Length: 116
Image (cartoon, rainbow, N blue to C red; front, side):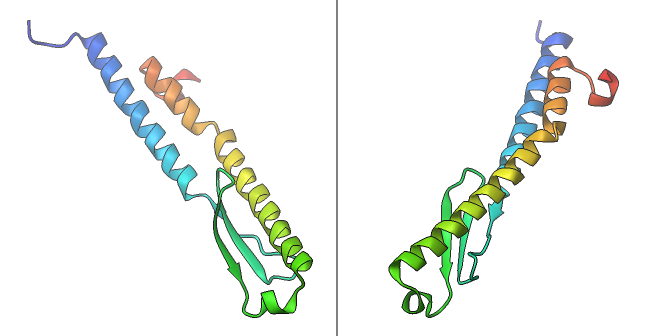
Protein backbone atom coordinates (compact mmCIF):
# COMPACT_ATOMS: atom_id res chain seq x y z
CA UNK A 1 0.00 0.00 0.00
CA UNK A 2 1.52 3.28 -1.08
CA UNK A 3 -1.27 5.72 -0.22
CA UNK A 4 -1.30 7.80 2.94
CA UNK A 5 -4.23 7.31 5.25
CA UNK A 6 -6.58 10.34 5.16
CA UNK A 7 -6.11 10.98 8.89
CA UNK A 8 -2.34 10.99 8.49
CA UNK A 9 -2.60 13.31 5.49
CA UNK A 10 -4.88 15.64 7.47
CA UNK A 11 -2.36 15.72 10.32
CA UNK A 12 0.48 16.47 7.89
CA UNK A 13 -1.55 19.25 6.27
CA UNK A 14 -2.39 20.71 9.69
CA UNK A 15 1.26 20.66 10.71
CA UNK A 16 2.26 22.40 7.46
CA UNK A 17 -0.43 25.06 7.99
CA UNK A 18 0.71 25.58 11.57
CA UNK A 19 4.34 26.02 10.44
CA UNK A 20 3.22 28.66 7.93
CA UNK A 21 1.19 30.52 10.54
CA UNK A 22 4.09 30.45 12.99
CA UNK A 23 6.42 31.76 10.27
CA UNK A 24 3.95 34.58 9.50
CA UNK A 25 3.74 35.48 13.18
CA UNK A 26 7.53 35.46 13.47
CA UNK A 27 7.76 37.86 10.51
CA UNK A 28 5.27 40.21 12.17
CA UNK A 29 7.24 40.11 15.42
CA UNK A 30 10.52 40.72 13.58
CA UNK A 31 8.98 43.75 11.85
CA UNK A 32 8.15 45.49 15.13
CA UNK A 33 10.40 48.51 15.58
CA UNK A 34 9.84 51.47 17.86
CA UNK A 35 11.51 54.88 17.56
CA UNK A 36 10.38 57.19 20.37
CA UNK A 37 12.36 60.43 20.73
CA UNK A 38 13.87 61.69 23.96
CA UNK A 39 12.18 64.60 25.77
CA UNK A 40 14.26 67.12 23.82
CA UNK A 41 13.94 65.19 20.55
CA UNK A 42 17.72 65.11 20.20
CA UNK A 43 17.99 61.34 20.72
CA UNK A 44 16.02 58.70 18.83
CA UNK A 45 16.72 55.03 19.56
CA UNK A 46 15.33 52.10 17.58
CA UNK A 47 14.20 49.14 19.66
CA UNK A 48 12.86 45.80 18.41
CA UNK A 49 10.03 43.66 19.79
CA UNK A 50 12.38 41.89 22.19
CA UNK A 51 13.53 45.20 23.67
CA UNK A 52 16.92 45.15 21.97
CA UNK A 53 18.48 48.45 20.96
CA UNK A 54 19.17 48.12 17.23
CA UNK A 55 20.02 51.73 16.33
CA UNK A 56 20.59 55.10 17.98
CA UNK A 57 20.40 58.56 16.42
CA UNK A 58 21.89 61.63 18.06
CA UNK A 59 21.08 64.98 16.48
CA UNK A 60 24.17 66.89 15.38
CA UNK A 61 25.74 68.79 18.25
CA UNK A 62 23.84 66.91 20.96
CA UNK A 63 26.96 65.56 22.64
CA UNK A 64 28.49 69.05 22.65
CA UNK A 65 25.34 70.78 23.92
CA UNK A 66 24.53 68.45 26.83
CA UNK A 67 26.54 67.44 29.87
CA UNK A 68 27.36 63.75 30.28
CA UNK A 69 24.58 63.30 32.83
CA UNK A 70 22.05 65.13 30.63
CA UNK A 71 23.03 63.05 27.60
CA UNK A 72 22.69 59.81 29.58
CA UNK A 73 19.27 60.93 30.87
CA UNK A 74 18.10 61.74 27.32
CA UNK A 75 19.33 58.42 25.94
CA UNK A 76 17.87 56.38 28.80
CA UNK A 77 14.49 58.15 28.64
CA UNK A 78 14.23 57.57 24.89
CA UNK A 79 15.23 53.92 25.18
CA UNK A 80 12.72 53.31 27.99
CA UNK A 81 9.91 54.93 26.00
CA UNK A 82 10.84 53.01 22.84
CA UNK A 83 11.08 49.74 24.75
CA UNK A 84 7.67 50.31 26.34
CA UNK A 85 6.14 51.11 22.95
CA UNK A 86 7.67 48.02 21.30
CA UNK A 87 6.41 45.87 24.19
CA UNK A 88 2.89 47.31 23.79
CA UNK A 89 2.94 46.58 20.07
CA UNK A 90 4.19 43.03 20.68
CA UNK A 91 1.52 42.43 23.32
CA UNK A 92 -1.16 43.82 21.02
CA UNK A 93 -0.10 41.35 18.33
CA UNK A 94 -0.20 38.48 20.82
CA UNK A 95 -3.55 39.61 22.27
CA UNK A 96 -5.36 39.51 18.94
CA UNK A 97 -5.49 35.73 19.30
CA UNK A 98 -6.11 35.33 15.56
CA UNK A 99 -2.90 33.42 15.16
CA UNK A 100 -3.77 31.13 18.08
CA UNK A 101 -7.30 30.45 16.77
CA UNK A 102 -5.88 29.56 13.39
CA UNK A 103 -3.27 27.29 14.96
CA UNK A 104 -5.91 25.53 17.06
CA UNK A 105 -8.11 25.11 14.01
CA UNK A 106 -5.24 23.68 11.99
CA UNK A 107 -4.56 21.12 14.67
CA UNK A 108 -8.25 20.25 14.93
CA UNK A 109 -8.60 20.03 11.15
CA UNK A 110 -11.25 22.77 10.97
CA UNK A 111 -11.47 26.39 10.01
CA UNK A 112 -11.62 28.91 12.92
CA UNK A 113 -15.15 29.98 11.94
CA UNK A 114 -16.37 26.35 12.01
CA UNK A 115 -15.36 25.95 15.63
CA UNK A 116 -17.36 28.92 16.92
